[in-house]
Length: 236
Image 1: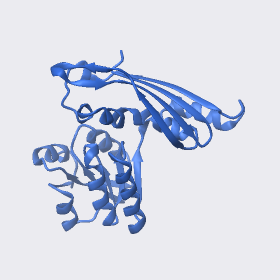
Image 2: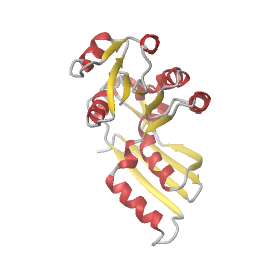
Image 3: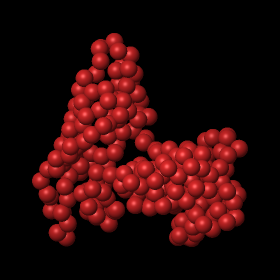
Protein backbone atom coordinates (compact mmCIF):
# COMPACT_ATOMS: atom_id res chain seq x y z
CA UNK A 1 0.00 0.00 0.00
CA UNK A 2 1.58 3.26 -1.14
CA UNK A 3 1.04 6.35 0.98
CA UNK A 4 0.28 9.49 -1.02
CA UNK A 5 0.47 13.15 0.00
CA UNK A 6 -1.68 15.79 -1.68
CA UNK A 7 0.23 19.07 -2.06
CA UNK A 8 -2.28 21.88 -2.51
CA UNK A 9 -5.93 21.91 -1.47
CA UNK A 10 -7.27 23.92 -4.40
CA UNK A 11 -9.99 23.26 -6.96
CA UNK A 12 -8.29 20.33 -8.74
CA UNK A 13 -7.58 18.41 -5.51
CA UNK A 14 -11.02 16.72 -5.24
CA UNK A 15 -10.52 15.11 -8.66
CA UNK A 16 -7.25 13.56 -7.48
CA UNK A 17 -8.86 12.40 -4.24
CA UNK A 18 -11.65 10.74 -6.20
CA UNK A 19 -9.18 8.94 -8.46
CA UNK A 20 -7.06 7.76 -5.55
CA UNK A 21 -10.04 6.64 -3.49
CA UNK A 22 -10.90 4.13 -6.20
CA UNK A 23 -7.57 2.32 -5.85
CA UNK A 24 -6.75 -0.47 -3.44
CA UNK A 25 -2.98 0.03 -3.69
CA UNK A 26 -2.82 3.63 -2.42
CA UNK A 27 -3.84 5.53 0.69
CA UNK A 28 -4.10 9.31 1.07
CA UNK A 29 -1.87 9.92 4.06
CA UNK A 30 -1.51 13.70 4.12
CA UNK A 31 -2.89 17.01 2.86
CA UNK A 32 -0.41 19.89 2.63
CA UNK A 33 -1.55 23.49 2.27
CA UNK A 34 -0.61 26.76 3.99
CA UNK A 35 -4.34 27.37 4.52
CA UNK A 36 -5.25 25.14 7.44
CA UNK A 37 -9.03 25.50 6.89
CA UNK A 38 -8.66 24.46 3.23
CA UNK A 39 -6.50 21.46 4.12
CA UNK A 40 -8.81 20.38 6.94
CA UNK A 41 -11.89 20.71 4.71
CA UNK A 42 -10.26 18.43 2.16
CA UNK A 43 -9.11 15.94 4.80
CA UNK A 44 -12.33 15.68 6.79
CA UNK A 45 -13.70 12.75 4.80
CA UNK A 46 -10.36 10.92 4.49
CA UNK A 47 -9.71 8.47 7.27
CA UNK A 48 -6.27 8.90 8.82
CA UNK A 49 -5.12 11.81 6.63
CA UNK A 50 -2.85 14.24 8.49
CA UNK A 51 -2.76 17.96 7.72
CA UNK A 52 0.48 19.94 7.31
CA UNK A 53 1.16 23.62 6.51
CA UNK A 54 4.23 22.92 4.36
CA UNK A 55 6.27 20.20 2.70
CA UNK A 56 9.01 20.80 5.29
CA UNK A 57 6.55 20.02 8.06
CA UNK A 58 5.38 16.89 6.24
CA UNK A 59 8.89 15.54 5.65
CA UNK A 60 9.96 16.27 9.22
CA UNK A 61 7.35 13.78 10.46
CA UNK A 62 6.79 11.33 7.61
CA UNK A 63 8.01 10.40 4.15
CA UNK A 64 5.19 9.48 1.78
CA UNK A 65 5.84 7.07 -1.08
CA UNK A 66 4.39 9.55 -3.59
CA UNK A 67 2.96 13.04 -3.78
CA UNK A 68 0.56 14.82 -6.13
CA UNK A 69 1.72 18.44 -6.60
CA UNK A 70 -1.43 20.52 -7.20
CA UNK A 71 -0.14 23.99 -6.35
CA UNK A 72 -0.42 26.95 -8.74
CA UNK A 73 1.98 26.39 -11.68
CA UNK A 74 4.55 28.97 -10.55
CA UNK A 75 5.11 26.86 -7.41
CA UNK A 76 5.32 23.46 -9.12
CA UNK A 77 9.10 23.31 -9.41
CA UNK A 78 9.88 24.37 -5.83
CA UNK A 79 7.45 21.85 -4.37
CA UNK A 80 8.40 19.01 -6.70
CA UNK A 81 12.16 19.45 -6.27
CA UNK A 82 11.91 19.37 -2.47
CA UNK A 83 9.94 16.13 -2.63
CA UNK A 84 12.13 14.55 -5.31
CA UNK A 85 15.29 15.35 -3.37
CA UNK A 86 13.73 13.46 -0.45
CA UNK A 87 13.19 10.44 -2.70
CA UNK A 88 9.42 10.88 -3.05
CA UNK A 89 7.82 10.00 -6.41
CA UNK A 90 5.96 13.03 -7.78
CA UNK A 91 2.94 13.45 -10.05
CA UNK A 92 2.67 17.14 -10.94
CA UNK A 93 -0.35 18.75 -12.55
CA UNK A 94 0.10 20.39 -15.93
CA UNK A 95 1.94 22.52 -16.82
CA UNK A 96 5.06 20.80 -15.51
CA UNK A 97 6.58 24.16 -14.51
CA UNK A 98 6.63 27.81 -15.53
CA UNK A 99 9.97 27.66 -17.42
CA UNK A 100 12.08 25.11 -19.26
CA UNK A 101 14.88 25.70 -16.74
CA UNK A 102 12.56 24.65 -13.92
CA UNK A 103 11.52 21.53 -15.85
CA UNK A 104 15.17 20.58 -16.32
CA UNK A 105 15.85 21.15 -12.61
CA UNK A 106 12.97 18.84 -11.71
CA UNK A 107 14.30 16.12 -14.02
CA UNK A 108 17.80 16.52 -12.58
CA UNK A 109 16.46 16.17 -9.03
CA UNK A 110 14.60 13.00 -10.00
CA UNK A 111 17.65 11.49 -11.70
CA UNK A 112 19.84 12.27 -8.70
CA UNK A 113 17.54 10.72 -6.10
CA UNK A 114 16.12 7.94 -8.25
CA UNK A 115 12.55 9.12 -7.61
CA UNK A 116 10.05 9.33 -10.45
CA UNK A 117 8.56 12.55 -11.80
CA UNK A 118 5.42 12.45 -13.95
CA UNK A 119 3.13 15.12 -15.42
CA UNK A 120 -0.66 14.81 -15.52
CA UNK A 121 -1.82 15.51 -19.09
CA UNK A 122 -5.40 14.27 -18.90
CA UNK A 123 -6.30 14.94 -22.56
CA UNK A 124 -4.09 12.07 -23.80
CA UNK A 125 -6.46 9.66 -22.03
CA UNK A 126 -9.61 10.90 -23.80
CA UNK A 127 -11.34 8.03 -25.66
CA UNK A 128 -11.64 10.02 -28.90
CA UNK A 129 -7.94 10.88 -28.89
CA UNK A 130 -6.96 7.28 -28.09
CA UNK A 131 -8.99 6.13 -31.12
CA UNK A 132 -7.26 8.66 -33.37
CA UNK A 133 -3.83 7.74 -32.01
CA UNK A 134 -4.45 4.02 -32.55
CA UNK A 135 -5.54 4.62 -36.17
CA UNK A 136 -2.43 6.70 -36.88
CA UNK A 137 -0.05 4.27 -35.20
CA UNK A 138 -1.56 1.29 -37.01
CA UNK A 139 -0.14 2.69 -40.26
CA UNK A 140 -3.11 1.52 -42.28
CA UNK A 141 -3.62 5.03 -43.68
CA UNK A 142 0.09 5.53 -44.29
CA UNK A 143 2.46 7.74 -42.26
CA UNK A 144 1.14 10.92 -40.69
CA UNK A 145 2.93 13.79 -42.42
CA UNK A 146 1.10 16.77 -40.97
CA UNK A 147 -1.23 17.33 -38.03
CA UNK A 148 -3.64 20.28 -38.12
CA UNK A 149 -5.46 20.94 -34.88
CA UNK A 150 -8.04 23.59 -33.99
CA UNK A 151 -8.52 24.19 -30.27
CA UNK A 152 -11.46 26.46 -29.45
CA UNK A 153 -12.07 26.40 -25.71
CA UNK A 154 -14.59 28.25 -23.56
CA UNK A 155 -13.22 29.64 -20.30
CA UNK A 156 -15.71 29.81 -17.45
CA UNK A 157 -13.58 32.46 -15.72
CA UNK A 158 -13.86 34.76 -18.75
CA UNK A 159 -17.59 34.16 -19.06
CA UNK A 160 -18.04 35.03 -15.37
CA UNK A 161 -15.55 37.94 -15.66
CA UNK A 162 -13.43 36.43 -12.89
CA UNK A 163 -9.94 37.54 -13.83
CA UNK A 164 -8.16 36.78 -10.56
CA UNK A 165 -6.92 33.39 -11.84
CA UNK A 166 -3.17 32.98 -12.31
CA UNK A 167 -3.51 32.48 -16.06
CA UNK A 168 -4.75 36.03 -16.60
CA UNK A 169 -1.54 37.55 -15.22
CA UNK A 170 0.22 37.32 -18.59
CA UNK A 171 -0.20 35.94 -22.14
CA UNK A 172 2.47 33.36 -21.27
CA UNK A 173 0.37 32.10 -18.38
CA UNK A 174 -2.66 31.73 -20.65
CA UNK A 175 -0.62 29.42 -22.88
CA UNK A 176 0.82 27.47 -19.95
CA UNK A 177 -2.63 26.93 -18.47
CA UNK A 178 -4.56 26.15 -21.66
CA UNK A 179 -2.33 25.45 -24.67
CA UNK A 180 -0.64 22.51 -22.95
CA UNK A 181 -3.83 20.49 -23.53
CA UNK A 182 -3.67 20.37 -27.36
CA UNK A 183 0.13 20.45 -27.28
CA UNK A 184 0.17 17.26 -25.21
CA UNK A 185 -1.83 15.53 -27.96
CA UNK A 186 0.44 16.78 -30.74
CA UNK A 187 3.54 15.81 -28.79
CA UNK A 188 2.19 12.30 -28.19
CA UNK A 189 0.92 11.81 -31.74
CA UNK A 190 4.04 13.00 -33.57
CA UNK A 191 6.86 11.45 -31.54
CA UNK A 192 7.74 14.65 -29.71
CA UNK A 193 7.91 18.36 -30.53
CA UNK A 194 11.33 19.70 -31.57
CA UNK A 195 10.57 23.39 -32.14
CA UNK A 196 7.68 25.84 -31.91
CA UNK A 197 7.05 29.18 -33.60
CA UNK A 198 4.14 31.01 -31.97
CA UNK A 199 2.30 33.93 -33.55
CA UNK A 200 -0.12 35.84 -31.28
CA UNK A 201 -3.40 37.30 -32.42
CA UNK A 202 -4.80 40.70 -31.57
CA UNK A 203 -4.87 41.99 -28.01
CA UNK A 204 -8.37 42.00 -26.51
CA UNK A 205 -9.43 44.29 -23.70
CA UNK A 206 -11.35 42.66 -20.88
CA UNK A 207 -12.85 44.04 -17.66
CA UNK A 208 -10.96 46.78 -15.85
CA UNK A 209 -8.61 47.47 -18.74
CA UNK A 210 -7.07 43.98 -18.59
CA UNK A 211 -5.46 43.09 -21.91
CA UNK A 212 -5.59 39.48 -23.09
CA UNK A 213 -4.27 37.57 -26.07
CA UNK A 214 -6.72 34.76 -26.68
CA UNK A 215 -5.82 33.72 -30.24
CA UNK A 216 -2.58 32.01 -31.22
CA UNK A 217 -1.16 30.21 -34.25
CA UNK A 218 1.62 27.72 -33.53
CA UNK A 219 3.78 26.09 -36.21
CA UNK A 220 5.57 23.03 -34.85
CA UNK A 221 8.31 20.78 -36.16
CA UNK A 222 8.06 17.33 -34.63
CA UNK A 223 10.06 14.11 -34.85
CA UNK A 224 7.56 12.28 -37.07
CA UNK A 225 5.57 15.09 -38.73
CA UNK A 226 4.93 18.81 -38.86
CA UNK A 227 1.96 20.38 -37.09
CA UNK A 228 -0.18 23.51 -37.09
CA UNK A 229 -2.14 24.42 -33.97
CA UNK A 230 -4.75 27.17 -34.03
CA UNK A 231 -5.94 28.26 -30.56
CA UNK A 232 -8.92 30.39 -29.60
CA UNK A 233 -9.52 30.80 -25.88
CA UNK A 234 -12.80 32.05 -24.52
CA UNK A 235 -14.66 30.77 -27.57
CA UNK A 236 -18.35 29.94 -27.50
